Length: 456
Image (cartoon, rainbow, N blue to C red; front, side):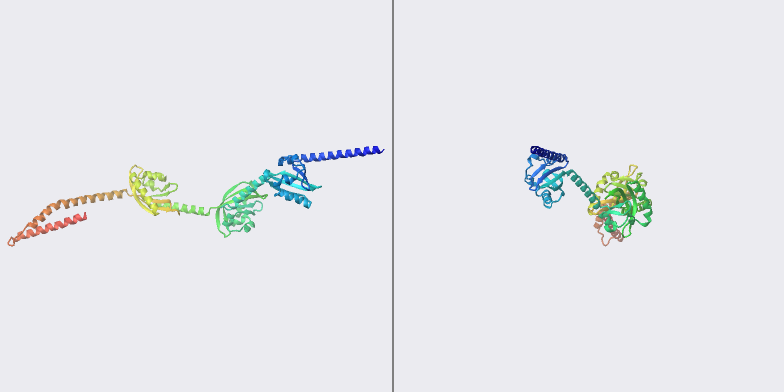
């Protein structure tokens, strides 16, 4: 009976050991099936378990680490969170969870560990891709933030439902005069002139309903009350989980004012052009574009009013072109604003006309010419008249020279003979008078010829 009991007891012991083995195998199978890496250590950091995923992630076969001290094999992990957090879990008997980068493997790990029995159980998994994705997302957010905050153009984000500002960049704060706190307490309607609010509400409803990008010219109002003309572009975005619109606003006030002034200037230019007989031109030095009034057609026979600088150069007489270029270069170097030039310009009929070109040069801050405005007058008839007068004068000078030099020879002879005449005292009175008059006439004629020579 005792033997039977012993056999039963012995059988129970065997069964117990077998059950324990099966239980351990079951646990091992479970641990090996984990997608997470897992290991166990004793309180003195001896490794007692190391699953396959741990082998793969850390490239450490279990036979090389089981029974070894964890920190002897992973001394490079001592300065990292792994060492401090594992020790804290055992010392405080608490579960800990953390993330840490492990440089030797260039991997990020998410770690969870907790005290178990006489040691520590550790689960960890590779989160490198997640970390990299998160970092890329952070970089994208940072890039967006920089593009938004450092943009020279005013930008803001507003809530589609409430129309309240959600974010605003520094350019908007500077341009519109409101502080960030003031903007955050306002809606986008509060930067609109009251007269435009009803129309804006209608536009917002249609655009938001369609969830479309919208570009439009609107009027906005600064904190000072100044109303400005603005080009805005809005796009639907998700901002911190809220449906929102990102708006970029470009102030076009100065541009529109300049355009209006230019249009008025052009109108005045056209009026003046009609009232003058000159061909008026405007040269953009940078582009070479040259705009003419209708004088280029009425005076010189060309039907277009838009040409370029090379076209003008091609119409200047070749013998005059070099001199004109030299004069213009000298004028630019001295930064003289006005110049007056005479040259020959080719008419549409193929004949050259003499022109007087008076122009005004505009310089930029660097002293470079940017624009030249001038008027070209046909002075062909006047030049012909001057040439005719000059020709007449030349003939007169020739006649004068002829008279002075041809007559001078005989006169010199007369003066010489007159000086040789010696009239005796008892000579006839009539003879004495003739001799005296002859000498006086010769002297007078000599004086006249000398004056002619001096004047010519």
